Structure formats: C-alpha cells, structure tokens
Length: 95
Length: 489
Image 1 (tube, rainbow over the protein chains, first blue to last red):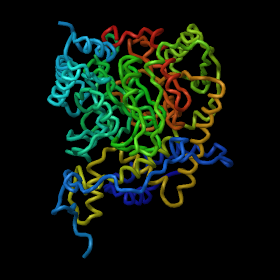
Image 2 (image 1 turned 45 degrees about the vertical axis):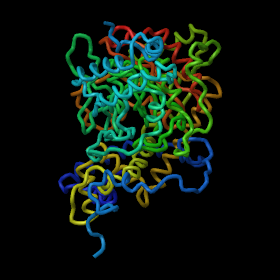
Image 3 (image 1 turned 135 degrees about the vertical axis):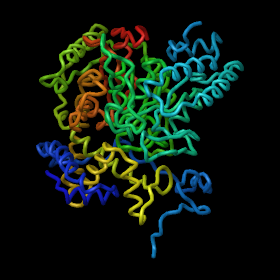
Image 4 (image 1 turned 90 degrees about the vertical axis):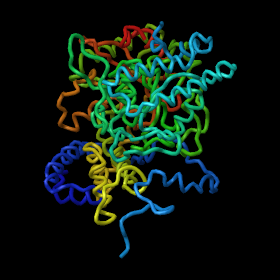
C-alpha cells in the first residue's frame, strides 16, 4: 500500500500536525515503506478469529457511578499555558 | 570508606536496618555518583534535595523501629511516571515545564514503601524507540563500551536512562515501562535485570500513556532478588485503572530459592531464524543447559505466528498512540505555539512539540484508524494479535516457562546510522510477541560477547505466573555469574 502526498496531507490534517509541503513527499515514501512491510499480515488467515481488543483476559470491573474527586480548579489549571480566571484560554472559536 | 553505591537493594536493606550506615549517607553516595556521571545523560531532572529530605524521614523511621519495606533505598523514576511537583516530560518538548499535581500509583507505592527518589530518568520520546536517541533531552550513553574501543554505545530503549543509571550504580534500582520491549531490551544492552510483569499487575494510572493495551510498568535492577523486592511493592489493585488485577500478586521474593527442578522449559524454534547472531544463539543454548543442569526439562515448542508480531505491533501501538497523544494540544499544559485559529494552534503546537519518530507513529496510527482502512489494518492486526496470544496459550499447555534471547544483538553504536525505521523496529523482534499476548517477561544478564558487551536471556511465563518467572530467572542468574559493569554485581 503506497501513500501519496495527498493522503499524507489528509492524515496530517486529521492528526492536527502541521507538515510543510516540502516534507510531504519524503514522509509519503517513509510511511509507504512501513505500510508495505505491514502488508505481510494479509498472508495470515484470520477468517474465524475473534479480535483481541485489549491487553487482558479479565472481565471489565464495575464500579459505582459516584463522584470521587473534584473541586480542584487551581490544581487543574496550574499548568495552563494561558488562563482567564478559572478557565483555560484559547484563540477565539466562535465569531 | 566503603563505596555505598556498590550494594544491592537486598544488601542495603540489611545494612540500613543494622544501622551500619544511614539512609542519608546512602542517598548522598548516590547523589554524588549521579552528579559525577552526568556525561551519561541518564537523568532529565535530578532531585537531590528531595532525596535528602526523604532519606532523613527514612532514618527517623528506621531509628524508631518502624522501617518500611524499601526505606532509604535510592531509586530513579523513568520520566514517564507523573511525580507530584517534579517536572514530568516523557522525553518530549510538548510537555515542556509540566509539573503534575499528583503522583502515579506505582511511584506513590514506591514512595509509601520508603524509597528515596533521586530524579527522573531519560527515555525515548513518549517511550517510542529502542535506542534512547529520540529523547528531546538528548541521547543517553550506555556505561558499557566494547573492550579496547572508545565508541559510545546506545543503552537501548525506551527505558535507556533507567538501564544506564542502574548499570552504572547511580541508582540501586529504577522504574521502567515496557510496551514492546522497553524494559527488557535496555536491560539486556546494559547488563541488568528488567522485568515486565503481566499486563494488569501494575496500575497504569499516572503513567504517560503510549499504547494502553500494551503499556506495563516494571522494575530494573542489578539482581533478580532486587527486582522481586521492587515488584512486590509496585503491584496491586488500583481502582483508578480498570485493567489492574484485583487479586494480590504472590510474594515473588519468597519463591527465589525454589529452583526449577521438574519444570518444563520451552525453546521456540521460530526465535532461531537463519542468520541469528552466533553468539546470541550460543548463549541461548548455554542458558537452556544451565536450566537442564538445575533439573528442568527442555522442550522444543512452536510459536508459529511469531514473524507477524512486529507488523501487528506497528499497527496496534501507533493506533493507540495516535489516540492517546491527541490530548497534547497546547490548551491545558506543556508547550503552546500561537496560531491564527484554534485549529492552527493545535497543528503548530504539535508540529513543534513532537519529534520525528512520534509524528511518524501518530500518522501511521491515524492512517490505520481512518475511514475505509480500519478493517483492513486495525481489525486485522487485532485478529493476528489473538493468534499470537493463542500460540502462547497452547505452548503453556506443554511448558511452564519459555527461554529465548532478549535482543538480536548486543548494544550498537550511538552513531551507527539507522535510517530505516523498520530496521530499528527489529530490535524488539523477541520482546514484542509477549507484549501483545500480555504475558510476563524478564531479561537476565547472562554473558558477555567477544567484545565484552552484555547479552541477555529472556524468560516468559503464562499470565499471572510471575512466581515461576522469578524462579527461572534466579537459576539463570546463579549459573551465569554475570560480572556486572564493575566486575561483580
């Protein structure tokens, strides 16, 4: 499976990573190399196989849907690059 | 004056309790070693003052007869564990200046057991790498060098700072994390013990996430006993991690003397491809012989899907990483690069904050999860993963443990050109299958190659059977009589 420049541009946008135009072609080649190597999985017959969706065979545990923590705005905001009062500040989203 | 950094954790524990020296003296010796060996670049942050403060608290408890299990033991913490008030970077520029207001469950448990944190250890960025060369904070040097050569070697990765610090006696032990071999491979490269327990043994809460269905914390130490002592403290149920095991792990220090008499040890033929490094193959045979001499039976086994483990991993891990790393957006913590709009700020921040390998994996992960490709790649990989896990299940119907090499080579040169990402990924060819299956694995230093560089042997057991894992490791350690960096562990 080869990735072209347009595909790299699209996935870079989906991943919200700015990729300069000049880097698209080399990146496409690099990612194609990895994807071509991954193609070998097609050889494996997985018709009757259920996917392994996690790292454990344990049944997910239930817990009470209760508040266990909270009301720590100062702590939550202490690493904010920019804040106003008790809010994270970001560039204007709504015109 | 005795060099206090030469002791193992088990020895230091005894000396501290007998008051042969104080926890503060022990901390000071390690702080001095850490400062003297800054050239290794093993630590991203040193916390000498905090270490002295905690050592004094340990001395107080020891004096009053209330010593905790790890009281006064100086440890390094991989900089992937969130530590309260102490910068946590994951080796990435994007977490610039991040100081968590909370402590990861594993580092909290080590703290509650009285251990003394020396600092935060360097790693590949977001634990993605096998050489420690992807860290934003610079590469770590392996304290080992080939006999008669000045060439600097990599410590392995991603827990390269942890492995280097423990190997060079800067810390008595360290935490590592292992997603595809990140504890075991650097342990082998630096001649120390590294244990990845069963997925679910250690809580993942407060550990910067890479691939959530694979990430698992574990100890890195100079002896098997020390690893057992640390792991006994690190494990346990945590309501904050829904995948953590509710029942307690059996005491793995208590089983160390039990030997391997009567155990069946599997040797998988798929781990001996044509072209396997001759010294690695010979050491593997030697390891099997040691176990046989100790009364185990060696059985050849099949793990037929082994060759598909790496490509499976390079779908599953990047897919999970692309999702986990979506949180780094410049809004709540770390680096922010201003942009014209919110979207522009995200894209610029992530472009500047992530390194090359991390971006590569995010893009691969985004691609395999994107519309139209999910079934062909991600779902397919999850199915092959199931087959790999079934291989192990079948094998453990016949054997109690599996013995393999840890890595295909000894440590390679820091300046060796590895331009092809896939060539770098091959470092983890022997460690990744166990990660996918979620089973425990450990690397034990077992010998030196012709150039005097450490080689490790890997032991694997079935889920939740760390007891057998440690029994086998102890027998290998006893037989190998590995010299350690200083010519004596």
